[in-house]
Image (cartoon, each protein chain N blue to C red):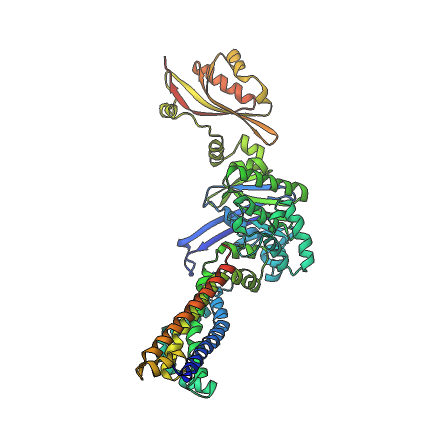
Length: 217
Length: 352
């Protein structure tokens, strides 16, 4: 294999990591509070706001139900507005983030759902404010579940980012399609797939380790 | 210290609040717990115990009525003032409700963190509390590494961290085995004694009431039906439910074969079977032999038990009185005149 080819593979790997990192980070920053909000505004919860909860829930479901490949092209005008172009890794990070936010939110909500209502009751009995309950009880107690959810999100983002390659997003998926598929180069195809597999394994192991560290049950 | 007056709690299953599907969990409850005492509320599951205790710190907001703790009307407080009032009211739970991701130390520190106290103040408060509950060596362990009794001790230390005046115990020993229950109750009695904290506890176990409470209330179907000194409750419960709890606790029910032979109305040749409850002086008086001498009846004892309830002695007996109807009637009058409670369970046919 030529050194140019190796450079190409290396660049594609970095591009994929970049897209996953950017979209993973931003979707966590937005999805985590959204998930908490989805949980605490439920009826009979600490900040019960049934109407707001319904609205958030519907918006989240809409986000979750649009197929990624359609979302990617549908929001091109928005992407262009945000990063000035609709191709390249920065552009691909926009739909990846948009798709991951509701995903993260629902996983965070599910993790919070696992907390025993008795803990919230105990916090109330100690005179905790809703904000204190969120920061000192809900998030720390759901940490293990949230880490599991974030690991699932990152792994999903790796495979989504390969799809983003199909529309000029760059990264390993793009490389695999252009060189492996369009130019009939099975070696390149195999290498990209192997790198993706290794990447997913790595993220999963890291996630499992973090979950073990934060879970005390 | 704790005053509930006319507290009612009604749950509406539909948001419309139509009366047909309303559940009256608490009906006009009145309760007064003086400072420094231990008050127990006993009742069957679903009787409204949990709702009652949660109305004290407003985990449940009463539908009507007033709740006063330490002279403060709780139902009229703003959210911020209610949270401050809750710092003065500790609470422990049946399932402990410790945070799994915090160490023993950090669990006890939580209420102090919530009050915004400084790190070194927290340390100075938490360490002695852990020593008091006997878990100083477990400070850095996580709740999952502790036994049930140890978890409840941590919960007690946590509840006391904010120096409350009142401790609410929600079935605190119901998830524990009898031995652990005993040691937790001892700790609660110690706390009441040394720190003068007023304790309100709910339970379905007579053992708990017997070993630590000063006064007891009986709750049934959302109503407080009886309220008495523990000694009185154990010697002479005033309600049928109270008697059932007591008989259950003492396991004093006549043998099944006898129960089947009992008839309600005295016949031509029947003897009364009576349950005698005696306390105080009557315990030390040889009443049965006097009964034989003075009334001429023979007494066949079917079951008997002497229990010591706090400072009082309580005797219980199920006996058959053998004699003519006039003699047995006279015997019962004699017993009643000696402060014995006589309850006629029924009559049995003579064997001869």
